Amino acid sequence: MKIFLRLALSLLFVLPLIACNEEEIIQNLKSERASLQARVDSLNAQIASAEALVKNVRVIRDTVRAGEGPFHLFTRLKAQVSHGDEDLGRVYAAMQDSVEFKLRVGEIFYVSVDSTNRVQRFRYAPNPITVHLVSKTDTGFVYQLIEKPVVKKQSVYEGALEEGSTLNGILFKVGIPGRMVGIVSGVLQCKVAFPLARAGDRFRVLLEDSYYQDSIWVGGKVIYAEFDGRIVGHHEAFRYEDEDPKSSYNAHYTEAGDALVFDGLRYPLEHLRITSSFGSRIHPITGQRKVHYGVDYGAPAGTVVHAVAEGNVTVSGYDDLSGNKIAIKHRDNSVSWYMHLQSRGVAVGAKVSPGQAIGRVGSTGRSTGPHLHFGFKDANGAWINPLSKTMIATPKLEGARLARLKKQVVEIRKQIELTQAAPAVRANDTTDVMVHMRVVK
Image 1: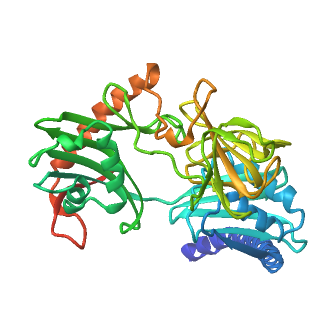
Image 2: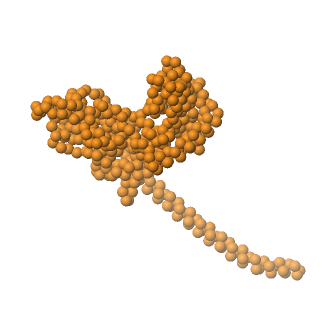
Image 3: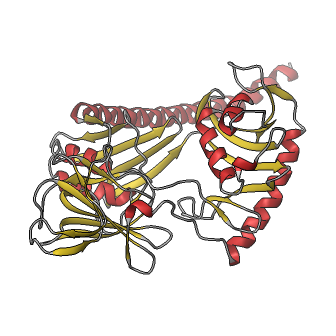
C-alpha cells in the first residue's frame, strides 16, 4: 500500500512537468513552421522575380565574318539596341584591358537586353573553356572572366631529318599536330641554317596542350624546341612567360635571352594590286615630281584593311592630305601607316593583333580614287620602303626578365626529363607514332 502511495505522489509531480515540456515542444514547432514558411515565401518571390526577368530579357547574337575585327561586330550590335553607342561603348571599355580579340570566322557575340532594349549583359566565348562576361550593375558595367577547368598534357616528340625530306614533312611524320608545326619550324629557322642541315640531324620538341573534358583540344604551346646538326650545330629555344600574360615579351628565346621571332609582316589587304611604288614619281594631282613615301594598293572602296603586325594605335584621325589615317607602333618601335581610309575602326591606345581589321579602303583626303596608301617608318622615324620590311623583332631579354627566363629554363629542363620518363603512347588516333606523354598537375 505504501508503494502505491509513493507512486501516486510521484505522478502528481511528473505529470505537470510533461505537460510543460509538451507546451514548449509545441511552441518550438510552431516557431520552426513559421520560419520555414517565411523561407518558402522568400523563395517563391525570388522565383517570380526571376521568371519576370526572363520574360523581359531578349538575346541578340551576331557572328564574326571573314576579314572582320571587333569594331565590325560592335557596330552591328549598336544598331540593334537602344543607346548602343553609350552602353556597348561602356561594355568595350570594361573589357578592353583584359580581352585580346583574336577573332575567327563563326565566333558568336551575345548581348542580352531588357524590355526597354537596353544592354544588360555581353558574352563572348573564344573557346569552350573561356567566357568573357560583362554585366550591368548599379555601379556600371563590370567585366568577369570565367574559366572552366582543363586537363594539361605535355608531350615530347623526337626525330631526325631524312634524305630528301623537309623539316615540316618530318615534323608531321613524327606526330606533331599541324597547328604546332608552323610554330616549331619558325622558331628553329631563326637559328638553324636548314640548307646546311643533313640527313640524320636530330630534333626534340616539348609541347603542352590543354583539353576540356579530357578530349576537346582548346589550346597549346611550344615549350621547347631543340635541333642538333653535324654542320649547323646545336640550338635550343625556350618559351618565356612574362608576369603579364598579354605582354609582347611572351615568345621564344635562346637561353641567353636572344629573341626567336618567326612572325613576319602580314599583308594590309587580302588581294594586293600595287598602283604606285615607293620612291620618286610624278604626283597624280599636283603633277610635280616628289618622293612617294609608301606603297599604294588599289582596291574597291569598303575593302577591309588589316594591321600588318601586333602593336598599339598611336594615331587615328583625319587631315586634308592623308584623309582618314591610322598609325600603329610595333614592338621594335617601327610604325606602320594606313591612309585615305573610308572609315577607321580602332582608336588611339587600342592594342591590335596581326591581321586584325582596323578600317576600310576609301578615297578621303588628297586622293584620285579608292586606294590604300601604306607607309612604314623605322625606329628612328625615317620613311622606308614597306616592301623591304620583313620582320618585327621581339626585344632581347635583360635585367629582371632575363633572370626570370633563367629560372624558367631550369624548370623547362625538369619538365622535359619528367615527360620523357613517362610511358610512350600513340600521338593521336590517326597515327602509330609513339610519344612520351604525361598529365601536368
